[in-house]
Image 1 (tube, rainbow, N blue to C red):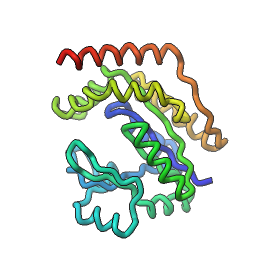
Image 2: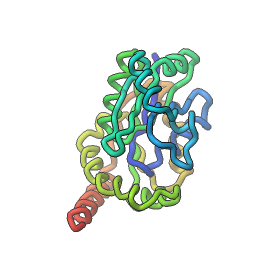
Image 3: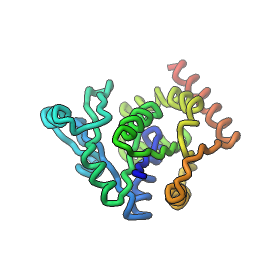
Image 4: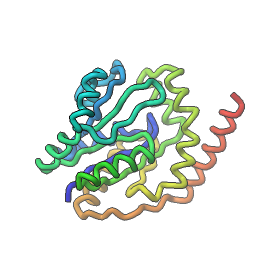
Length: 224
């Protein structure tokens, strides 16, 4: 069975930390950057976080049918895509590509594209509190305007998650402790080894905490 992993969560939830943790846990896990025309940020590394290209290169890749899961950002008109030849190359070497995704909808679309090339996609959702997200984003020197874009729509992403979390195979509550988050790497590896793609129930206490935060965020947004 050809496998991949997609880690889903909002910015600052711990996606990149878990992605890097899996890579460090075992050499078979490889971070799989998407191709993008977006401007490179100060802390990002070309070929590691993304493959940064210009519009002409991106459009040529589409024309040559090299990309799957192509999407266009409605925020800055940048383009994103996944090089399918690289996926097959990695998998043929016995490696497991690890993707990241900001939303369930995006992950579902990616899963559909991967299934077309006979790759099964193991979906992991990471949830953390808004307080942890804000601290992480500002630790990365994100400016207030950039952060606010995610602050406004986080409530709606969380609402969608509560309705659709059953589409994920594994759920992680990130309490803000990096070591606790990385402990999940071993569990994920064991599940993939056993090929157990069962649905994981979310603890009621966590769901309740999420609902409280959703209502709080919506109220703040309404007051702005």
